[in-house]
Image 1 (tube, rainbow, N blue to C red):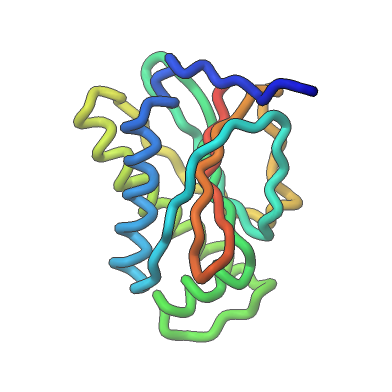
Image 2: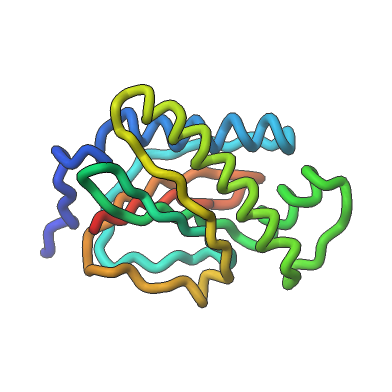
Length: 165
């Protein structure tokens, strides 16, 4: 029997405040922008995890002392529904509009969390969201264990992934 992947629980990005800030950023931005609810589940650690989702947005997660990557993962149906609620227009599932839209909403998720975390001393830097089809997602710079924060939107699983470098 193999042991579950371990995360350095003393790492600042693994702090409860970080998890709650990202969860609250997602919940608040979705509710405000699209009137769609998100329900978070228990975070877990994974090694070499690959997203089952169709669309992802990655951002650099940098503070003065630490580096990582933050990734938001969405099934295409959820991404499409969010964008359509925000814009009031129909979008095609395979269009750049879906990528642009999830990039924008992910920027709002990150911005809300960054504001909260920086008032607590994290000093996170700005980051430009990079939306892509999950199959084109760049591989992590290391084989680090990641923390996954699953959440349901419209009864489908989405994820916040924090990868530490």
